[in-house]
Amino acid sequence: MHPVRCSLLLAGLVLALSGCVSQPAKPGASAEFQARSGSRVSGKVVLSDLGSDKLRVEVDARDVPPGEHGFHIHEVGDCSAADASSAKGHYNPTGKRHGHHDKAERHAGDLPNLVADAGGVVKYSADVKGVSLGDVIGLSLIVHADPDDYISQPAGNSGKRIACAVIRGL
Image (cartoon, rainbow, N blue to C red):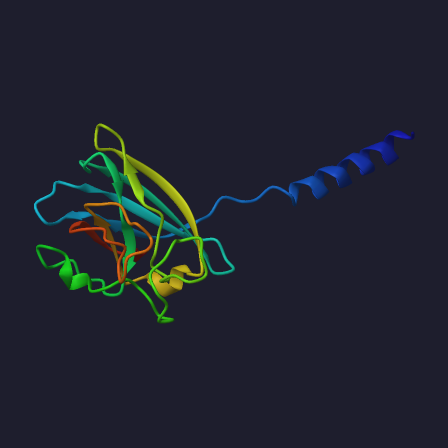
């Protein structure tokens, strides 16, 4: 094959393949956890819009009791109450029942449970369908003391609220 033709073919192949590589999500909001209900939880959440009503939620937290914890977007961006009750209920603009984060029948604020390791550290990343960054800026994120069972109404029997964070745009 002629060298120029080979170079053009190679360049075309590189351009075609580069379109297949997804770009990392760009952070669009963040939130800082405030300990509530006597806990010592601290940490940060970064939220990125993935387009098509999909949101990436990344958590880096410390001093979380080991094990699983319910984690939800709540309807009010207010963490002022000592028990975080000021954040109100789960974000649920469509009036659906509480459910598993991968199901169609669920609150928009239903997220996968967080898992803290034996040292109380959480490194969490979840891509959540049905919600976009613009929907949640100004709302709050809540970490609960117990795991979400994804069944009990209205909030998954997740127990008290041990951390609260207001979502702020970057």
